[in-house]
Length: 123
Image (cartoon, rainbow, N blue to C red; front, side, top):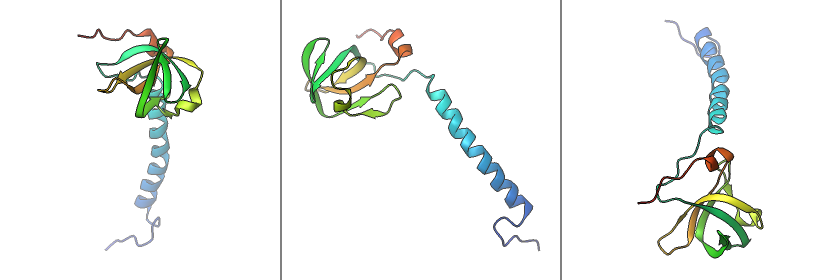
């Protein structure tokens, strides 16, 4: 009976370990590389506008006073969450969705590729 008691003593286990150690980092890089070229999918009820955070949760949406909802999510161009205080005073082109009470709830800061695309028309 041929058994491998040591972790990397047998050639098959060593080969599998080396392959997984080589393949995992490459898989992670390829998904990150593709992520920068993709256009994020936006919900059908998303609107486009320019947003300026004046004093969180107070914002200006298309030059008119507005408000972020409690728990609002602002996603940057890399799709990571942004704190509203970190972008205070910046005029950003965004897609946004309002909650049922009319407050801005989900915000996506647009990349140049996303800004060039037209939003689907609202029914």
